[in-house]
Image (cartoon, rainbow, N blue to C red; front, side, top):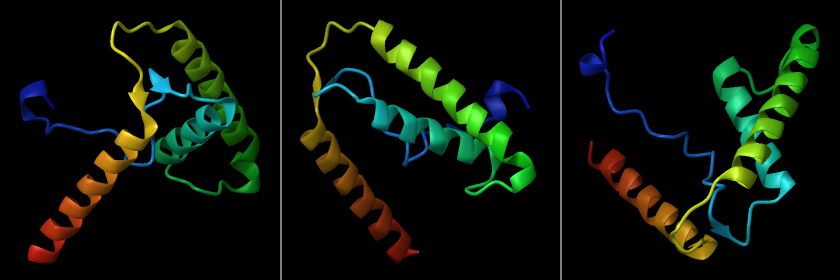
Length: 103
C-alpha cells in the first residue's frame, strides 16, 4: 500500500511516553512498555508454552533497546509532568467514550 493510501496510525493507548518525563521512567515502566509492544505485535497476551521463550526474549530485547534509547535521547524542552499527561489521557478517553456513545 502506498503512503498516500495509509491512514494515520497513533501509538497504542497502553504504551506511554517514556522520554522527557518528570520523574524519569524507571525500569518497570520500560519493561511494561516493552511487554505491551510485544503483545501487540505478536497478537498474544499470554503466549503458548511453545512460544514462551521467544516471547520473553523479545520483551527483554525490546526493554533493553528502549532503556538505551530513553537514556540517550536529549530534549531542549522541559520535562513533561506525569500528572498533566494523565489528565490529558483522561480527557481524551472521555472524548472517545462520548464519540462512541453518539454513534
